[in-house]
Amino acid sequence: MIELLATSLNQNDDEPNVKLARSLAESGNTKGIREIVDGLDDKNAGIASDCVKVLYEIGYLRPELIEGYASEFLRAMKSKNNRMVWGACIALAVIAESASEEIYENFEDIFEAYEKGSVITRDNCVSIFAGLIKGNRAYAKKLFPLLISHLENCRPKEVAQHAERIFVCIDKKNSPDFRQALLKRYDSLADSQKKRVDAILKKIDRTFGQA
Image (cartoon, rainbow, N blue to C red):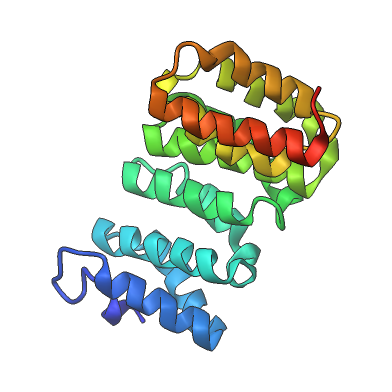
C-alpha cells in the first residue's frame, strides 16, 4: 500500500491518498489499513503524512475501520511534524465517539495539543471533546465547561464553525448554556457569521425548545 501513496508516486497533491483511502474503505481491507497505520512511524515525513491523510479519509467514510487505532493516533499527535499532529487530531475527532474511553484517558495530551497547536489542531480538538461527550455523557462534567469557555473566548470568525462542531454533543440539559454562550458572542460577529449562528439557534429551539 505504501507504494500507492502520493510521496511514493512523486506527486505533490493528495489525489493518490484520497483514492487509496476510498479503495480501502470500500473493500474493508483491514490488512492494507494496518500497513498504512504502520506507516505512521515511517522515518520519511512525507510517507508518514500521507498515511495519516489516508487514515482520516477512511474515517470519514467508515470510521469503524480505524477506531481500533486510537493509541497510534495519540502517539502521532505528539509528533514534532505539525502535519502529523493535526492529521492525527482529525482522525481522533472522527473516532472520538466510538473510542471515547481510550481517548478520554489521554485527555491531558489532547488538551496540550489544543493549547499549543495550530488552528487546524485546535479546530479538531474541539471536535474531539464534543465527540467524547457524545460517546459518554459522564465526560461532560469535565469537558463541556471547557467547550463553553472556548466558545466564549475564541476568535469571532471561529464562533460559528466551532459551535457547529460542538452541536453534536448538545442535549436538553446543556442546550441553555450553549445557547447563552452563542448569544454572548452574537454582537461581535460579522453578518455571515450571524447567519450561521442564527441557524444553530433555530436548531436548538426546534430540537430542545427555547430556554
